Image (cartoon, rainbow, N blue to C red; front, side, top):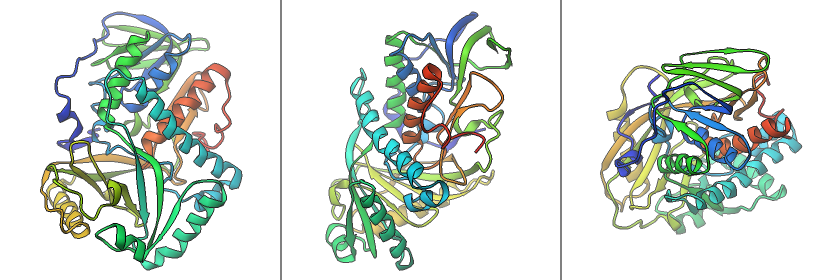
Length: 395
């Protein structure tokens, strides 16, 4: 499956990256990670702090899949409102999961501080606005639930919004200490850091077949076999091979990155911006003063709508910020997966011991995968994590 079309912005900033070797012999390890995007490299970095022989395989290049097309917005709030999640799984589980996502932002910040090459990780504000009057009441209920259960948030009415932004909206939720990052560089730097700490990482190495026995997992590559005690599939939207996750929906989302902008008039604190419509538009700025705007999600088809959808994204940007006149410099579309309940699929395969999946489905995938890394580390080391029932593959 082609995970993106067009020309994603992030890899163009890092064209002189050092590569990783191709596997050329048979090896053994404690944990094999399949997939070298953010999920896999975060997992490798976390396990490097423990006495586990860790190997990561990427069939192409580290960070070249979905990670290269990720827009790098990092928030504790999810596509699924807290109030909706409470209805589905109860107050205790819903609030706990939201708290895990909030903690994940701090964990991402911490791991970024360890990296030999920074990835433009910044703590930023976020503005979530009602797209229409009919969304206002539910958004207010969401705000009240966030405050009730200990999440910091401010309420903005229409007048306040018009004083801070060049566009208007009925109301919105404003949160601080969220984050944004260059996701491609983050994955590459995590990979390098993991290698420095003893993990073995290989590019251009594809798993061709596998067989599972009672005490060992076996994987064939072009040049040899890997035997492992545990395997983590961190192949994201590209796999449904064994996971058999119910309710996973693949869609395509569209993004543009503009030429650098001289000023951001009418854009309070250059905050992250997203809306209550589904599908929604989402916006952020970059370290080199560009704007990323994405959205227009649609069912996954082979139809190429990139040129027309890029035009629509630019028109949306200009309608929201009429004084910011710019043009599109990069445009791309990418595969995006979601789940019926808005939660990721993280945990052990129901039938195979030692076989794990970290599938951060949803618009909050990077944060979900940070949560997943913590969970799977605990499952491998201690065979338990409190959230394992929430994100189970067989839920």
